[in-house]
Image (cartoon, rainbow, N blue to C red):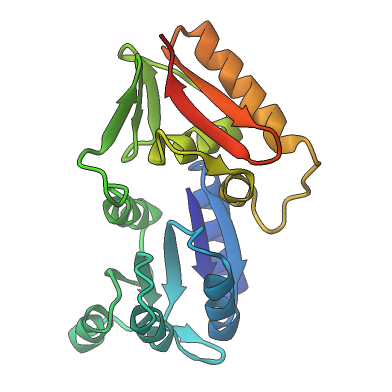
Amino acid sequence: MRILLVEDEPAMASALRSALTRQDMIVDHLATRADAEAMLSESRGIYDAVLLDRQLPDGDGLDLVRRLRAKGDTVPVLMLTARGDLIDRVAGLDHGADDYLGKPFAFEELLARLRALLRRPPGMRSDTVRIGRLSFDFVHRETRVAGQMLAMPRRELLVLESLMRRMGRMVLRTFLMEAVFGLDDEIQSNALDTHVSRLRRKLAEADAGATIDGIRGVGYLIRETT
């Protein structure tokens, strides 16, 4: 899961980024509305959600939401704001924000609201998808084989999540790289292949009934084994 955090207060941004990273999320941080709009325009839909402060140095974050929705961008947006009045909350929701959280807030509440926004991947009829004996719960971000929890490191979890969201389709290397690594990560040329190899081995050892196939230089897909 990859999140774009748009927050100009350094302490708040650092705390949120650290807390979300501990929840196995990739977090990219920007401090202005203009930078966020440029990133969202260039990123080809890589973000699962945007955490957007309303009061930014170069204007109202709500203007960014309006512009995104006018362009047909449906990325979920959770507004973060010190403005707690009902009229401001209503304005945010009416102009395309998906949820609105006033500062100060408990991180547990933010996380719960974020989970609600991401509860179901677009086009899927269930919060959990299955292939072979493997299942992935998108709400709790848990992987199980025949009902038994399968623990894995954050990067492998992100690879699997991306593949399961697009089960049966080839997922391009560029998309996987963007889903697994943040803007500030130092990435070696074989980093993605290493994570996929470890994940493939882990699925085989767990007898998951699923494996990952790849086309060199193109991408990967997850399929059921026979």
